Length: 106
Image (cartoon, rainbow, N blue to C red; front, side, top):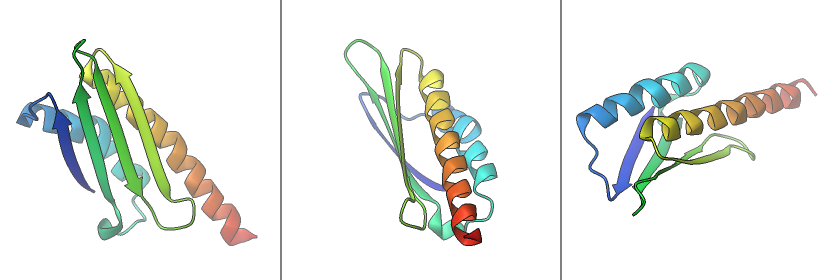
């Protein structure tokens, strides 16, 4: 999966990139194994506010009418925001895949 990461008030270090890869991208790749790599382009926006809270937004477009998936999470820990975004996306991907199976059967 090709994920473009941008940040506000935060430097994206190799450690953060590795954490995002392990906690988010790898897990989502496992759910989207049937999709072509060219179709799996996503954007991750990580922001740190003046109160030292982290806010992560993840946006991915998959084929189909309802293929736009978006998740957002805010927490005091960066790892928690990434995991929160992943959990939201896992639910959305499962629903998206279930809708596609029902559509193709009907």
